Length: 190
Ligand code: HEM
Image 1 (cartoon, protein in one colour):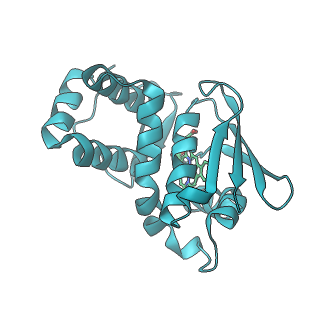
Image 2 (cartoon, rainbow, N blue to C red; image 1 turned 90 degrees about the vertical axis):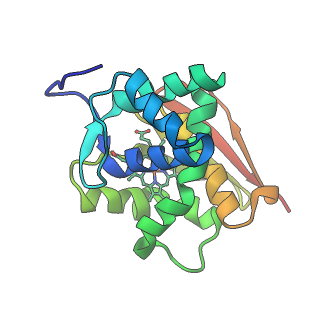
Image 3 (cartoon, rainbow, N blue to C red; image 1 turned 180 degrees about the vertical axis):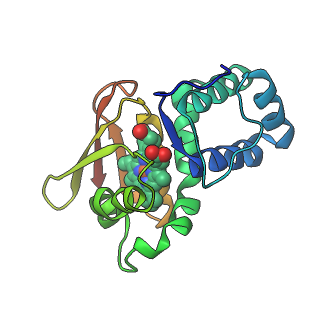
């Protein structure tokens, strides 16, 4: 959709730059170029320090879904998983060296999304409420009008992979993933 609207939701440029990296490395550079043309988005390039309309992410992902016969959810999840190493690098000054998946998830809201908001007041990452259920389970409540819980699930899996804990971290969505509010259960196996 072309044209800008004064109150439309926008997201941090890093999210778009990483979307490009995800598409290029998984499906090739020419797919990215085709997606920009065919999804009818306004921008032809994305810069980390800018903000861009959220609907452009959905336009690009939906078109990619048509091309690859995958659902928007699957693609958002794949994208979320893919971007973790880059997110960790971009925001690594807020990481504690002893953190693994469990502590990372417990601290994301305050340490990571908090830092994103403080560094750039235009950014508005989703609210994550992380509840400890004993020492081996976390319940993560995602809330965002953008309805991108697929990305959240992908990021959680990506964090487990980043710390080499994929085989001991089990991620399960408890409520439908296309809602504004989504509950995710994360179990830490022995
Ligand atoms: C390394 C830690 C993390 C960093 C540095 C990070 C950073 C960011 C940034 C910069 C944005 C864009 C915000 C905006 O433009 O308004 C974002 C969005 C998002 N983050 Fe995180 N994040 C991290 C961890 C997580 C985790 C653990 C989850 C899920 C449990 C998560 C879920 C999301 C989702 C779903 C979005 C998309 C926007 C939305 O749904 O409203 N993030 N994050």
